[in-house]
Image 1 (tube, rainbow, N blue to C red):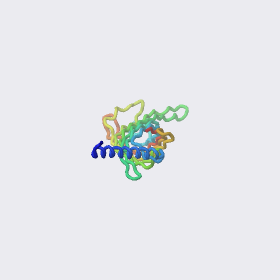
Image 2 (cartoon, helix red, strand yellow):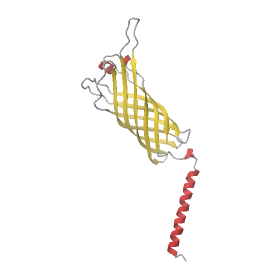
Image 3 (cartoon, rainbow, N blue to C red):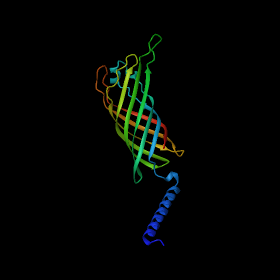
Image 4 (tube, one colour):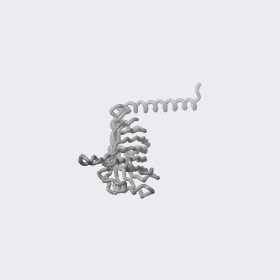
Length: 223
């Protein structure tokens, strides 16, 4: 016969196994749209920044403000981890990289006029973020922000500037949403502000004023 103590241990293990199995089955019975936000998500979006036509920047490179690109095209890639949930809110930690640029050439004035110089503006920014997310696994919105580093330049193509020696501190903040039409692929949109600190004048590089750039982006998210 089996002694009392081992039998009690076997009974306890069996009960725990039944309880765990029931818990797993219960979790699987919850519809996907009612489950909490998953642990990871990756983003890939097209970015549409609005650049400043700043007279100070234009003066520094010898053009007019209208010669500076006002719109740009680029991309955003990011990764986010969701380690904790507090009531209806899920905390997210992650970061994004944005790169975008655009050329602008003023048209010639009159038949004998010459086209203006071509100016190239470019933005590259790496931005760690903390986010507060609201919703369920198949769709949620968020607000987020962080402090990162940015390289921004505006230069004439016939008189390029030397590379920026160091990236500039940047505060980013904004929000967006992800809607998973499929189990692992979502439509993602984001509206973000990049508050870029001023760049001091350096050898052969003019000073760049402090600026806040608005970036709208849209694309896909994957989990």
